[in-house]
Image (cartoon, rainbow, N blue to C red; front, side, top):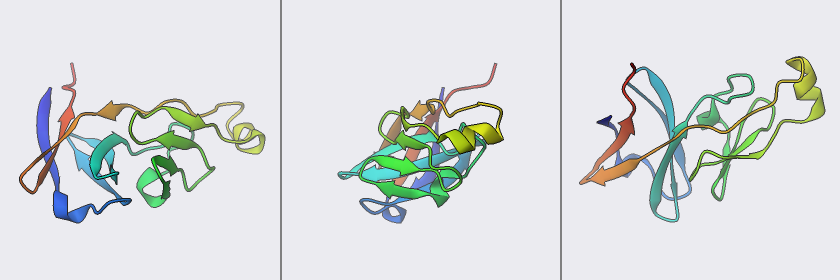
Length: 116
């Protein structure tokens, strides 16, 4: 796995999130309680852009159909509703991948798994 510089610490204030791209992956970086966290930035339900959603404490809400994910763990907190599932023949959302994040000076680095 490689640590990739994706942003500057000064770009992400507490309670805020940004979207970045690294090694061909879209990643959401959020600062909660002064700590940075990173998860996949594309909603597992229908590809909504999570950085365009809203951050409520440590939960990001997808702007498309409202799936909710914990930014600390990537775990699905709340699935989409019945109507949204009907749009995709019953497909709901599932957990997002979480990534290790480190701050080195003003650099934010994310550990990206290498493709086989």
